[in-house]
Amino acid sequence: MLTANYYLAQDVRELDRLAIEEHGIPGFTLMQRAGQAAFQATMQKWPDTTALCCFCGGGNNGGDGYVIAALAAATGLKATVVTVGDPDKLGGDAKQALKQAEQENVSFISFETFYTDPPELTDTTVLIDAMLGTGLSGEVKGKTLEAIEWINASPCPVLSVDIPSGLCSDIGKILGHAVKADLTVTFIGRKLGQVIGQGPTWCGELVFDDLGVPGEIFEQVSPVTPKSLDQS
Image 1 (cartoon, rainbow, N blue to C red):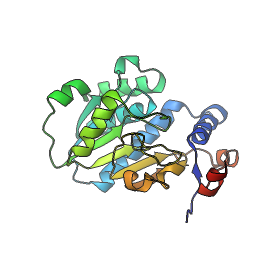
Image 2: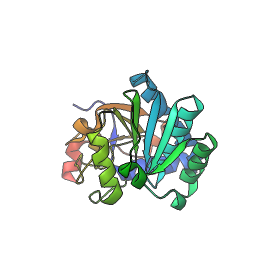
Image 3: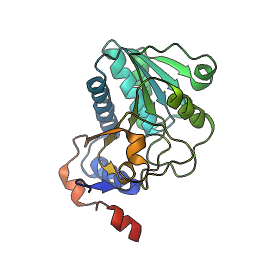
């Protein structure tokens, strides 16, 4: 039985919009808070971590990954970003997060180079899945698919940012392929697909952080339950 509120992807986007537009919280501030929450959860789960390898996509989920990498580097950990999305096409908050990572001297490697000649990863390396967020609708393809397969074949523990890449956040369905995370840190609103269908298996341990958004925004957006979803 569900004991917390869960939301569809479109409703979480509305919560995010309300926090930014009606309560004046800059989007980049939310991104920084998300990165901080994920980084802290990583270190709490795996306190012996010495290195993070962050797989970053081309959107805001990737932006969260850049923030995580910057935080890791700033605290003395070895931080590597594997660019799955084209960093030259980033805009807005994600681009600002990329610049933050560059300022912290994070190491960058394209997925193509990583895939053909991957660096040696130690048993104290954690993989960060920051490739695809809640907006995914079709099946995973291309470089992201290859990255998911590589991550799942690795013996390193995996943290997924907001939701495992390839998992439908509304119905908990695997969209072709998905990252099988050991820990998922999700933000602002819990996603229904994390607790129904294949969600619990692929998310692993689930940690929630509301990123400090005002509680009144949750009064403006109705949560959904599995029963109401089936009737829609």
